[in-house]
Length: 268
Image (cartoon, rainbow, N blue to C red; front, side, top):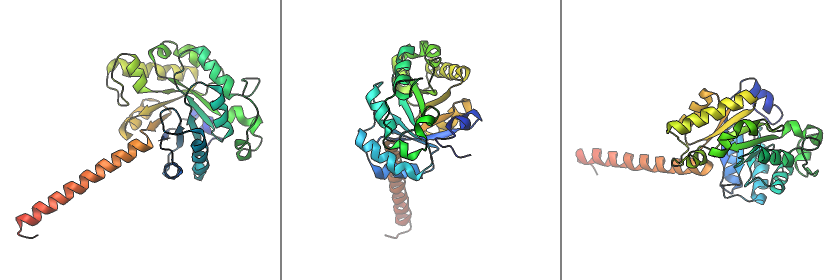
């Protein structure tokens, strides 16, 4: 089954797993390439990515080449930008630094239409993408609270009990940092790994979708095996930089090897 915005909840409830493509480069070219690459989901990062609203809109437009759900990580828990990216065509929101149930309720208020929330009506672009959008929006739109601090870890059950949340998303770097450890997307500290496991267990208990950011493909595979519904594979810039480094190393090593072989045989 292909994951789409329409079957998002049933896909994961039936045991589906997903790899999320993470886009922080402000470019329609790279956004389209990420969408065409075959990721199950794609996310535009307005928090730590180099992306403003206008570019986010353009990236969402070119990502239409893929049926994958289009998610946006907004810069902060601020209703204006949350409503704008949903009106622009995003079918999901990831919100950073949700530390309390009250903050989670504020996020729901901004992203759900009444009576569940207080999202203002005006689906300028997204309404043309999905027939009967307003009637379907509370089912189509996925709302993820980031659990990424020691405070949020302590309050996780109260956060996850907030009606209207679709799921939680773990930020390992900030989580580790708030617990007194170096930030990393490849955590090895037992206390951080235990915290991540606790968040996942709480999400399972609450019946919520659980995602996590990962620093490598191996880590994505690992967390999916542990029970996470989806894992984000690094970022477009991270993958690009990794490919550049690897390609350059191979090119230089290959050139060196040929040079040594030619020299030893007397050829130039």
